[in-house]
Amino acid sequence: MSMLLLGCSSTPKTEQDKYKEIADSFAHKSLKTLSKNTINPSLSLYNKVKSDDDPEINPAYVHALASISFALVGNSRWALAEANLAIDSAR
Image: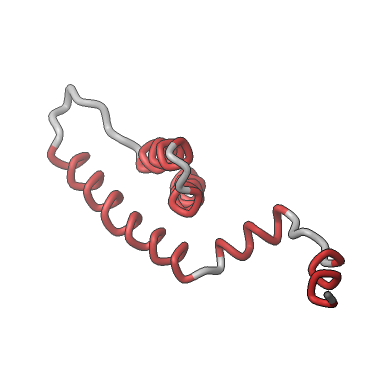
């Protein structure tokens, strides 16, 4: 009974607490590193070998699009990792 009352008295996590918990996790850092080390070099190579008529692709747009795609399918960890990379790439 005391466990039930103890559980009811705890305050829910804020959005900032939830974000920090996810951003500090090993999974988030791993996903971010994986994406950064696959998408950015691929785009760099594409931008070097593309013809002059083709537009250059900015990594920030690719990470933002990936973030939206992951959010739409309900994968919040991947979406957050990609959103962070999009912000970093845009700076």
